[in-house]
Image 1 (cartoon, rainbow, N blue to C red):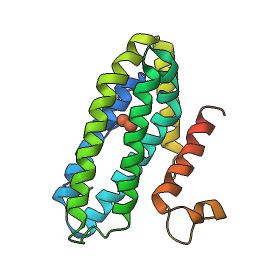
Image 2 (cartoon, rainbow, N blue to C red):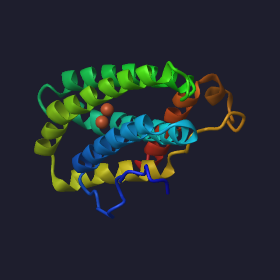
Image 3 (cartoon, rainbow, N blue to C red):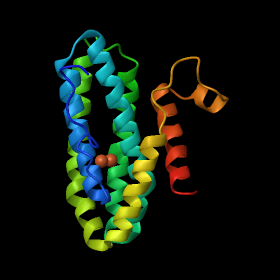
Length: 195
Ligand SMILES: [Fe+2]
Ligand SMILES: [Fe+2]
């Protein structure tokens, strides 16, 4: 384990049986991973960035499959809140895909990463403020636990970063690596939810 390793969800064996607590912990992990990418160089930066891409892919996909559908109907105004969050997620994915094509040592990498970080953090704050607080008030502990379970199962099943040449199927071949990762994570989330 490198000295740059920062704590991640699960390190302390917390149960995470509340979907909001779990997602907020992931927001913290994402912030820590941005720090790690910024502080590292060379191979370590590449490795930290790879982990950041995977966590972002898993996190955003799980939100889109598990919590946004609930929020849309779960509280007044939910429809509009989710619409705004989805637009932010779409923009972040596009930036992430572009960034993924840039080598981590390229001089263009850091300015793009900082822009992504700013957007991702603004998005996370908006979720916490306008979506998560309402989710918690609009449902019971059993449902919060069920949603957390689906997200954890998806995380466990989600593929690690695809390697060029390992992809199977024309669909994944046509997508960029980030989109392919999200696509496979979506399958894992749906499987975890029994869909
Ligand atoms: Fe999100
Ligand atoms: Fe989020």
